[in-house]
View 1 (cartoon, rainbow, N blue to C red):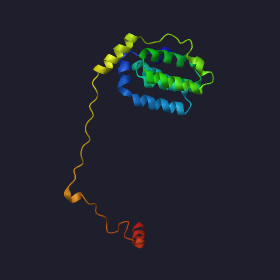
View 2 (view 1 turned 45 degrees about the horizontal axis):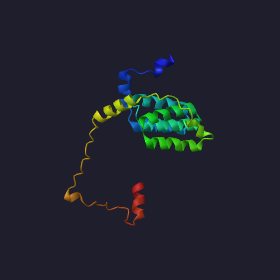
View 3 (view 1 turned 180 degrees about the vertical axis):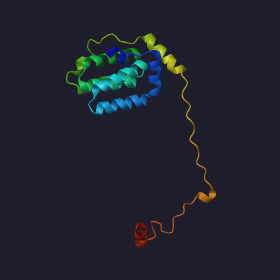
View 4 (view 1 turned 135 degrees about the horizontal axis):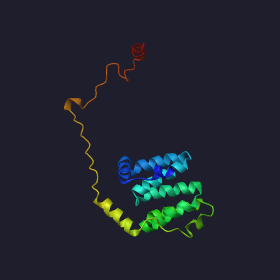
Length: 171
């Protein structure tokens, strides 16, 4: 059943969120788009949006795929959602994408109702703000001994000028 493949329960969403970071889903979508596998990119990005509804990068990437496929319906849905999310830079990027589409200027006419509410946006922002940032561990400093500060070249080093000795070592 196709519905069972695309529906997620809360534990499924948490597992997905734990598995994919923003960059991972975007990188994977870029690969699908580069190879013309737009349906896979769209499915991946819709799943990512379901998990992180206010992540505008997912929505913009989905809109890029829609422009490539000349699919106005999904583009319009994402644009309507961006209006509710109220992310002006993303809205500007979306409008700029339409310059590449013949007749793209009409894609913003008659937008559908947003699939996300202002209350859902605020709740998602509050949840994201309350989520602790993962602590990055500091890079370990390399221990340098005073004796190790200069690198010694072997006697048969590169600048010895003795090519015959080098060739003999290869035999």
